[in-house]
Image 1 (spheres, rainbow, N blue to C red):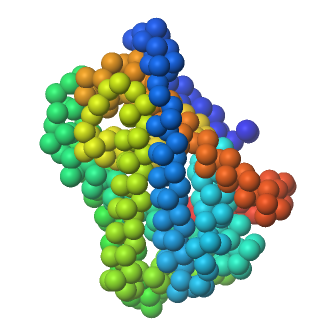
Image 2 (cartoon, rainbow, N blue to C red; image 1 turned 135 degrees about the vertical axis):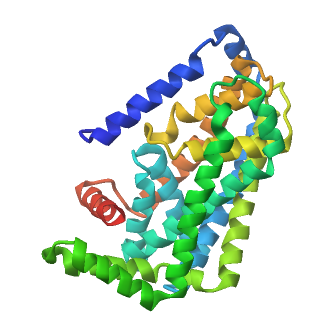
Image 3 (cartoon, rainbow, N blue to C red; image 1 turned 45 degrees about the horizontal axis):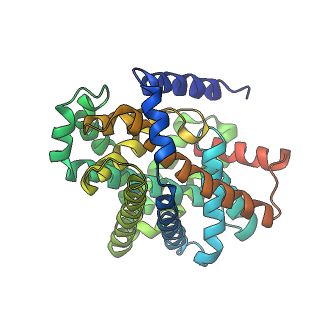
Length: 341
C-alpha cells in the first residue's frame, strides 16, 4: 500500500474507468446486466479451466530440462499464481508461483522466472498474431471513432517488434549458452558493484539455465502451438459469454478483442486490471456498433467470469497447501521481485 507503483496503478485505472463510463446510458447498462442469460457463463468457465490446465502443462514442459514435475502438481501452483495476479499489484502472482514452486519442488527462483518470462513472451507474440490475423477486422474498427482503436495497428507493429526481438534474444541465449554467459559476465564485471558480483552472477546463471528448453526447435514449436491453443480456448470463453447478451460479433472479432484487451493489461493498473479491461473491451465492441451500455455490461460480466473462478480456486489451493500470505512469504516474494528486476 505504501509503494508508489500501487497508487500509480490506481490512478491509471481511474482514468480508464472514466473513459469506460463517459457518455454511458446507465439505463441501457442496467437493462443489459439484468436481462443477460448467465447460464452461458458456465460453459465459458469450463473451457477457461481447460486453458489453465494447458498453461500448467506448458510450464511443466518448459521446466522439464530442469526438473520433471507432473502437470497435476503444476496446476495448483499455476492457479495460485493467477490468483496473485488478480489481487496483488504489479503481477506479483508471477513471482509468487516461482516462490511456491521453490518451496514445493526446490526449483531455483531465477530458473523458474526465466520460464515464466518465456511464457509471457510467447503469449504476447500470440496476442499480436491474433491482431495481425484479423487486420481486416481491425480496418473495420478503425473506421469508427471508438476513442482507442485508431492507433492500434501502429502499436501492434511496435509491440511485435519488441516481443519478437525478446524472443530472438532468448533463443540465441539458449542456443549459445557459453557465449551468452561470457557476455553476461562481461557486463556484470563492468556495470555491477564488486560486492554484488557473486549474487548477480548466481542469479544470471540460474536464469540462463531456465532457458534450456528453448535449445530444441521442436520444444519451441510445441510451446508456440500450446500458446495458440490456450488463447483460442480463452476466445471460446468470450464467445460463450457473448451469447448471454443480445449482440453478435464474429469469432474473429473476439480474437481481435482478446488480443488487444490482454495486451493492454501490460499497462500498470490496479490489481485485476480494473478499468483498463473495461475501457478497452467496451471501446472495441462499440467500434462494431454494439451499444455502449451492452458493451460495458459484457465487459464487466466477462471480467468477473475471468477473475472470480481462478481467484477462488487459487485461494483454495493456497489454503490446501498450507501456504499463508505472511511476513515470510511477502519477503520471499519481494526478494524474488528484485531478482526479476
